[in-house]
Image (cartoon, rainbow, N blue to C red; front, top):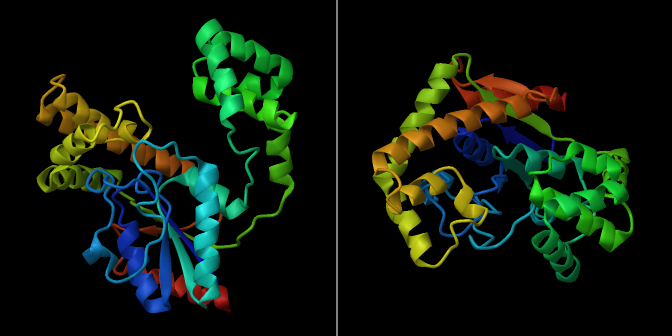
Length: 308
């Protein structure tokens, strides 16, 4: 049996429920793969599983960062690798579960990232961007790494600065680092399970219900608490779906009801983007939530077939 199982799919599709059910049957642990559930104090709006939902199954990689921190895919891969190694060292199976496709793909491929950020170089490039504009940094990047510059839009300030920073730290363009990463074989060979719906309307209905439940549980109060703690509304964490819209309502820019409708629309759009991402993965065995009598039984059957 594979020591790593990946459960992917759109928001509100039931990934956590399936992961916990399989973990109980297989003596496994669930490694969270969600770019927002990593943040402490962001529970309701990220649909972070509570103790009842986890049902005694350990879930490493929840609550590993503060909302004000920058958190990268590289940092996620490092933490997830360590968690999986620990799970394997105890003779257990790791179930990687979540909807952040970039994080999951990077983990499975074993991508090593070009260079850790260094404050001196980052501040130098940031200073140039502030003084002369991001267009000037973009021109610098075109000289140093034309391949990366070509695929970045001038409005993508964060990635332009990062690409230039990598060149300054390593002396090699980001495109070269990416090419080297692609040449390495994948680190893991998991069984991929994907949750989907034959009837997209049923998925969207579940998304809407989940947003209603978030409001009932106190999403507004959670966002207020974060703002009261001094978390900058411009941080990556506070730009998450649910937090950005509710913060706008708290500032009086819209009503809570309007914010809720915007959260629902943004969540439905996000679910669609997640499905687009995961459908590119030909290794995924798709399980259809609205057709299945028992998702865990179907998943166990696939695991059994792979063992033979």
